[in-house]
Amino acid sequence: PPAYRRNPQARQEWAIAAIKQAAQASSRLGLNAHATFSGALAWPYFYPWPPRKEVMIQEAFKELGRLWTPILDCFDEHGVDVCYELHPGEDLHDGVTFERFLEVVNHHPRANILYDPSHMHLQQMDYLGFIDRYHARIKAFHVKDAEFNTSSKSGVYGGYQSWAERAGRFRSPGDGQIDFGGIFSKLAQYDYDGWAVLEWECCLKDGETG
Image (cartoon, helix red, strand yellow):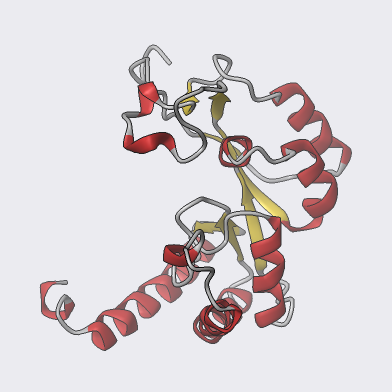
């Protein structure tokens, strides 16, 4: 709301109250998983020079833990999992950062994962092996395709180019490089019982065609 935009403390309090209301709304809708992002306190320093001090990252994750623990407790009261989309631009963007977060929230049972293989593929991660490692925490799933075409001009960071010009880019399901057959097989192997939510972000086709 406009009244809070120049008041960081009031804005944060409003945001925390809003996401707690979302826990109640999810419960009333009969949903047991809620998608969200972690926030990005440490992200601006993910690739700095000179190398960042470890204490800075420790403090950022401690603050994430302080802010998220009461929210996770609220979701637990409503019987809803908090599913963090592991996404570049957020502090939780891979398995290492998710594990670090689990430590600061005391391995809270409601701290879980929204699995999106496109973001892992563009980071050159083993997104199938990720399911083997973290399946117990995967409670939501985005069906989104991507491709990474090795380039002599740019890499995973994209060179500030448009999405169509990047080495790594999102595609319509079936047009990219994601092995959805392998993903659905592994999720079935581990008895995943959540939603498979189509997320379309193609840089070439319009939404209806995609």
